[in-house]
Length: 270
Image: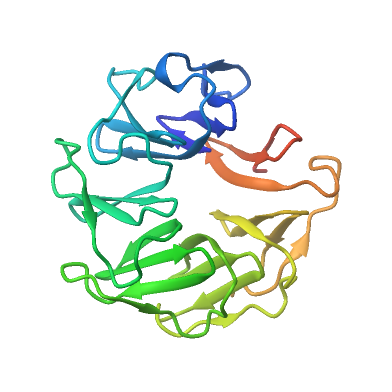
């Protein structure tokens, strides 16, 4: 789920949906080549919207960003898991086909990057301070140089964690994994947040105003303390118990939750 031009873009296992208005209440299913495709990621890069799917990736070809064409070439028919713009390159993570990149934001010609980690399942790509982090199946890797990629395992993030999301909040890096949240203030040394349930699989982390929202496979959590280290489970009528929250977004004065098998929720931030 993404906020693009104050509209809600929702990727599902049966296609892409876009809200008709900024209210986010009425959605249209996108037809064409994306009809009923499994959508993995959505990203706005420049004036274009990129959609990664089970059989490659797609790019918007109109001003309203609502019709899409498939990108052919090296990534055709590959299962693309994630896409990220870092500096002036676009990086693409695939399922068991490794890392691809494009040096030209307009050409969409992607090359396979031969990395030291091999062709694995790349779930997360994140760049900051000339570093690139890759969440690869059960291990988090980092390259301390963008120009010369050389990946090594991140210290402090235990093995077999499966990184789901990486966010920078209050100048700290939060790494959401299958077994809780890891945090680092220097983007190098990580430790696990002890207050967060270790058995919760963290799907998304999002800050709105002074509140950190966390979606997991069994609940919805928030943190209101200034250090972002203490979390409490949200238990009210807004989100049913045992809800698997996959994605969190802010659009205008509302917070939106995308869930697994329980639909789509929103509420006013106030």
